[in-house]
Each structure stands twice: as structure tokens, then as C-alpha cells.
Image (cartoon, rainbow, N blue to C red; front, side, top):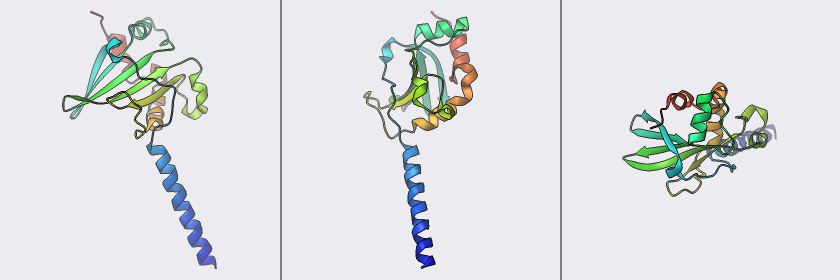
Length: 157
């Protein structure tokens, strides 16, 4: 009897672990929207092996960073992931007033939320936004951006 209970308990644990891993592998619904990429300013490019990432945002966001002010609500920061010369996917950060309250404090990135989009602009629910959010928490001193200094150094034409 103990062996049966132990086996059932072990099976329940494995099933729970599989479910939790499955939850963490996929995106979650957020308030983040797909911006009009053509209206954003390309301020830096990052090369990662065969992946080229063009990163862009609004003029207002760049100007705020240059003045030492917080990036305004309503701002999109877009990472356009190119592979083999074609748009592969979009990683979008969007900031909205009070959006941080959607998460418990351990996951909060102030009022930024994140989402992955497919090249056609639809949400890609197969990407892990929680992983992105966790990583960006380490950049709290740079408004949660890895390219904050690139934005600050950017020169308008």
C-alpha cells in the first residue's frame, strides 16, 4: 500500500512539475501592443551570432533619457529580430501608468510590460515573457533597458 501511495505521490509531483514548466515556457497576456514600427527611431543595433537586433523607440523616450528623466508612459521600445535578412519576430516593451500593479513586487519592472509578436504583428504565445521580465529586473537603474546607454548616446540627424 505504501508503494502505491509513494508511486501516486511521485506521479503527481512529476505531473505538477511538467505543468509548471509548461506555464513558464509560454507568454502570458499583457497590455503590451504592437506599435507602428515605421514611426519609431532606430537608435542601436545588437549582433548576436547570426541574429541582428534593431532596437527602436520614440523621439520622446530618447529625449527624456538624455535629460535624465523617466521614460514617459505610452512608450514602446521595440527589438526587431532579423535572421537571414528577414524579420523573424518582435520583442516589445511598453510602459503604461499603473501597469506594474498587474504583477507581484518580485516580478515588477516598474510600469513596463513585455510581449513577443510574430512578423505579421500577432502575439506569439510560444515565447516566454516571464523570462524576459525577470532578466530586465536587473536593469532597474537604467529604466529596465539593456540599451539605456545607447539611447542616451544616440544623436538625432
